[in-house]
Image 1: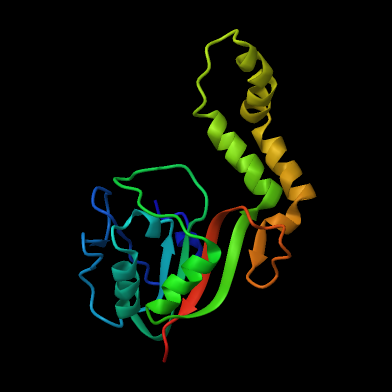
Image 2: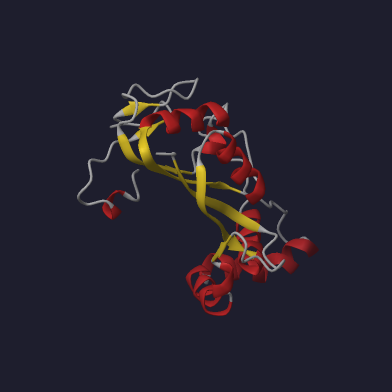
Length: 196
């Protein structure tokens, strides 16, 4: 869907993804290869892809191959999230695990963030889980959960606005700034550079 394309208005923007999507410039092969020349790009933007490739190390090596010396990889993936196959869903990382994985493939990680941490993560997880909880109507548990379901279905925007207001410190947390209250997080984002 290229949701970030508008952030790069003056760039040559090529799309690569797993097979099955329309309008791609490149298909990511089973071995994570892309039919593009080596050292072709200044930036590889990889958002929520790493958990879907069979071999993350091969995928990161391919990102390194595609980048010009000094080029950047901006990679986000899940820390905690439900299974969501498209067509497969293989991996979850801790922040330190992702940092180590990216570094092991030859990148120099410049910035590393946890996204949606602590109470924001908890509210997000409750919201997602409630979509998958099926309890017969008029059951005591269903009656007890009804106000939460109502809040999540009818007041979602307000709930997220309140999270922004009261838990702004739990939106984006840079590595090293974690005071121990950010041990639960939904996503991880790394900005890494290919050595020049």
